[in-house]
Length: 189
Image (cartoon, rainbow, N blue to C red; front, side):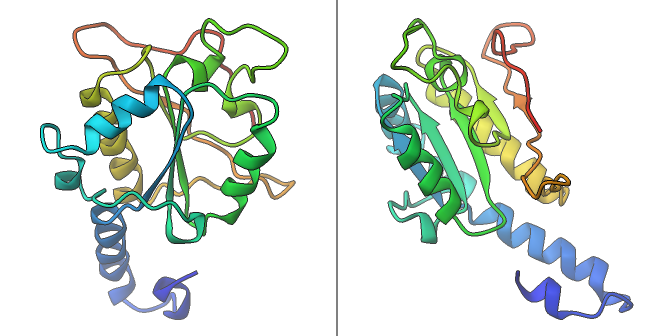
């Protein structure tokens, strides 16, 4: 995977090296937006100067999955777009993390139709849920900070017996509200 795989595990320096590696990963996330609706506008607002996502280490949005390690799914996903989303997820290099931004990406939102996917977590593992319709830029920043906490603690999600990644499924708390959990979501292994 990287330098940590090349280092012997019996060195005393390994634990400190792992902290440096986690710090570097945490401080340089490369997000790839998969924005299909109104949440994409809030995603763009988060990257602008007023909210400045760059201060949190996610400066440049990459539109190539091979250059990214964070996938932000924002907006509703149609059945015809689902294979594209799955292919993009497969092309992102390990370690990779996923943020589900908004009610439509998390649960299908108000679009309960045959042509709309009722939550992207049914098809790709999601690490952090950002609730809202659309969520405020501050909530997305909190979602990125939750990913950074995951990376900093070296909580790269493990793989199950079938080789699929086990998601963490953390819900971000909206501003000025109690604990938020996307309605009807179940984390699938």
